[in-house]
Length: 149
Image (cartoon, rainbow, N blue to C red; front, side):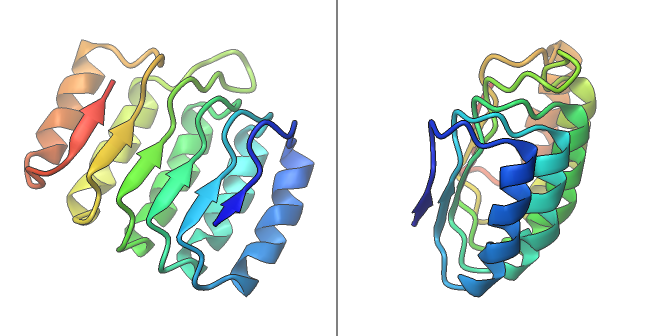
């Protein structure tokens, strides 16, 4: 487990953490909740996530990750075949834009490939009814997936 929640981690700090993560190939939990990680930090993490093939839990709630950061993370998620929990709720993006329908569409594109995923947390976002429906439709292939929007 790698946990650094409530640590005021910035994008620069996230890049440094990302540089170290490949040396932890058996890591199962990455918890960077309640920090100041934005788009650049999410991008840096996304670049190394494919090396963390044993990751089961990824907590990035309460950061500054908006739709662009979600796009980068979503591209990396299919490599995480063991991922069970993905928490991205309560994120307000760098420009004040919360995770919205663009982020929902990017996640929906990869949800069918996340067969181990059992919990997707997207609480307190600005995903509207269309985005929610898109996510739920994409999740139909995984009856065990709980989506909290």
